[in-house]
Length: 292
Length: 280
Image 1 (cartoon, rainbow over the protein chains, first blue to last red):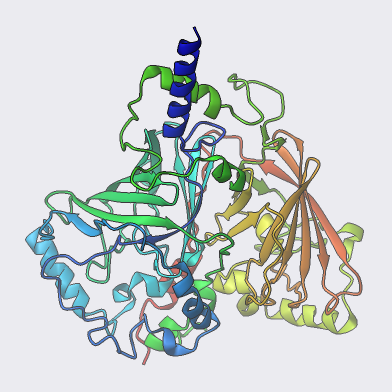
Image 2 (image 1 turned 30 degrees about the vertical axis):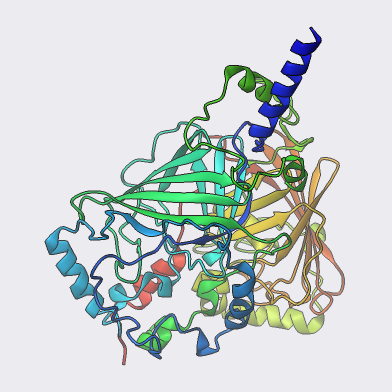
């Protein structure tokens, strides 16, 4: 009897130690907190020469933070070393991970169109060819300007909510089994329906508009975009991330991208990223519009 | 969140706390032990949806959901008659008059005269600030967890995060269009203290304005499961002769399909203004 009790006790202890991951009050694996994200945006094999910032010093480049606009350059500069994470884990798959050779399955005519489009982006010949980030557009799933812009995960019954510092973006991932929105609703951030598989949050997103950029080299995806993300709680401080990107208008088959989230130091504050309010980009590029 | 993390045993160096990616495979007896320990919901709710008992999160009223004001404060927070494009409405300001200092009353009239080009939210789609974001004619969504809240606004995807951890407003940050918010509960009322508000926002489209000394204290309290009372005490010694208060009911969007969409007016304005760009 005593032996049995001891055995049960030991087993219960061992069991408790194995299952140490916390849960939210409604039973979801708890991934809440603030994280930096790394690795999601990567280069394909034989990328087009990046005409947006070929030397890295192009004064017309929209990424040049040395333009002295507002407090952002100072804050960004200070925040970078604090927030950059990811040193702990050694093995990382990042960027385009499928296909392994990074040769994306472009429809040849769409790849050609994309390369043509890029040539008109710097300087931008018209509004349509302005990089979406430069327009303060919502970033879709990929363009969160991850250095210096952490993500917060909140969980409540029926949904996971992701808050981005970048352009004060937010996404609600519905876990209540509702259907996707009708096909006439088109969103920068799409419509996300998710469910948990063990410690992995699987998120199916549709209803994108045709204004999602993956990267500088892939400046638009189409409204046929459909993504499946997998957020896997790897340990108390890390989430592994993988997304399958399906866009039948542009690619002949889906491809996959990987990255990871790393918890930030305690006490890190979220900062406002007021994009449009400080932006002079279109004014600088094109001059003053007639009605202003 | 801190309490939860402290309770978690430190993962071993070689084996992460969760050792599998798919449905965790453990002996069934383990599942039974773990379930009993770890999946007790705080403020446990019965499973029936028709319960009239108030929903709680960590012992506080659950404000999660999509809400909207149903008034005309976005056009003018004081009493106003109708005009083309402006619905008439009664003011939401207690005492029905804003206590402007004399110079500020003049400045408000100047703003009103130039509103077509000077209203930061209406003419440029800039972030509306607080409390203006609450009574825009667009829904907003309260996201509530025990330690932290957020409010997502459909207008210009404005966003506020509201820590409930007792942390102070940080020193030395630049002002923010949506300010810096810190929340705490007083009984069943959520109290949010907002400072660091950028001076460039207006309270409405009628030119009512403030300075960088603005300090707002909001109070959100459920009056029943689908209605809230919203009160905001506004203090700005550079512009007003005394603090003043606004109050209004907020209405839950009860349609189960209700969801925030995107009102990306910056993008729409760019499409309109830069349609024939470049201009040089």
